[in-house]
Every structure is written in structure tokens, then in C-alpha cells.
Amino acid sequence: MDFIEDLGKYNKAMENAYDFITGKTTLEDIVEHGEIGYNNSYILPFNPEVSDGRDESTIDIVIEHFSSLEEYEKCAELLKYRVGIEDI
Image (cartoon, rainbow, N blue to C red; front, side, top):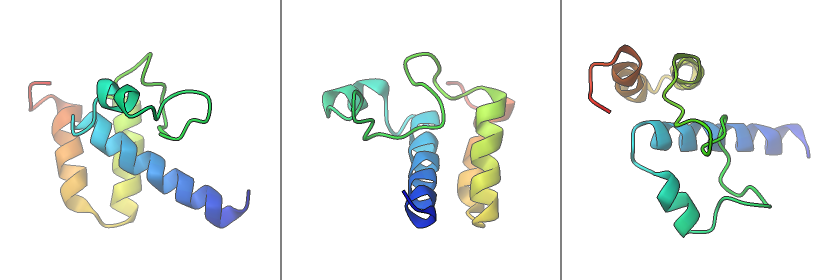
């Protein structure tokens, strides 16, 4: 793999994490579409079988990523989950 490919996978993992944390995608959705398994076609920065990604450290990593891309609406939504404003 080269740097550009790795960067693309990293960005995809952060997008997937955002969707997973905010409930736009569920583990059931991933399993239903056959995206989890041997080839790891659904990349996440955490193991969805162990965690839902809504822990403080994971959310901080995802917020940092979107902040660096100046996607502040996503940061604000993630921050709501981090500080517990929304019922999850």
C-alpha cells in the first residue's frame, strides 16, 4: 500500500466511525450487507463487535479528524454524543 491509499482508508474509517457513532449505520446494517468479516471492507478505528465507538477517546479522535478538515457540523454532532447531551 502507498501513502495515498492509506490516507484514503483512514478517511473512510473516520467517515464510517462518524456514521456508526451517530447511529446512521448500525452493526446490523454492516452484517446485513456482508461488509464485516475476512476482507474487512468496512473499516472502523475500533472493533464494532466490542465497542459502539461512543467512548470518549474514540469520539475525540473522530472529532480531531473532522476538525482538521473543517467539517465543524460533524464535530458539533459528535460533541453532543461525547458530552451526553443526546440520549443514545
